[in-house]
Image 1 (cartoon, rainbow, N blue to C red):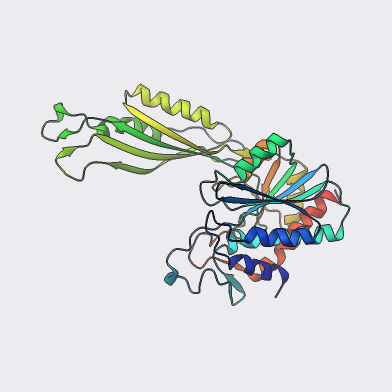
Image 2: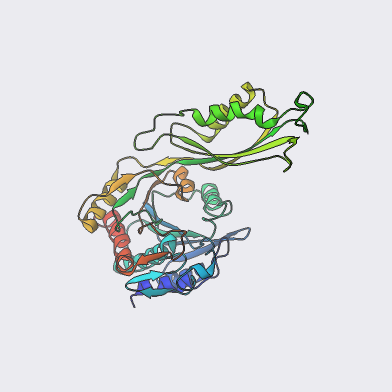
Length: 377
């Protein structure tokens, strides 16, 4: 069994469903301390965060990941226990294999190998992991970034090990992510009998023109490699359950995935102005999941492209698509951020898995990035 398969298996055995780290970070810290890293445990609320560093000064290169996983769902749907790492036909199965315990294991081993080969390396290398990426992400990297900001901790380059590849390891280089903004809208009316609509005010009827304008709007035409900003309504609730009652309130939940053409504040102002123009009696709660970030062409991006081309035999696709990641909290510190990780086809699914050959190659990929950025630059 390879060292990365062994460490990945140890992590998968731990039931670290958000926000419970279940001892994963203690395991990683013990290994890294033996390799000469300084490890700091940053706990906020119920969330564990590990900051492990080696070296000093600039540049500061961080490998970023998370030890928490989503719930496995119905256990009977799995071919084997999701928390018992199982290899079948050259494939490792278990919750968190792709997203993203194997990447965390590979990053850890890559750092161990790198500092063993270069104990006096220039700059600082670090591992940052949280147990709150799959949840609300309120007490994880977001608060770690706040702490870094207060103490003046700089980060120059950040490589996130999120599963980004499409068909084979390294075929995609993520160079940015869209921002995410969720609105919970409550529209108030007056409840009444459907036979006497003049004595009531239907919030559904009142809200529909505004909602129609929201979903029909073209927010922008995209930004460089980013797709256009989109708004999706995800939930609508109203009514008493009776067919003869006009409801007194309607609740709508919607989400925007937005590119750097917008800020969360700008979108909030635009949408509230629209609702006011339609004369709605409403309240609106916003949750800012993160601003968009983008790493333009430069040393980090060019180096990653070259390394991935060597691994894949062809230059990777460079993309800003997909959801979001904890890099959204690191980028505002002034860091250039990219994402490189295993194939994402099975993430969050039953029988989540990673090809063992791909897993065995992963530490070498991260080590090559460390080597090229800090030693042979």
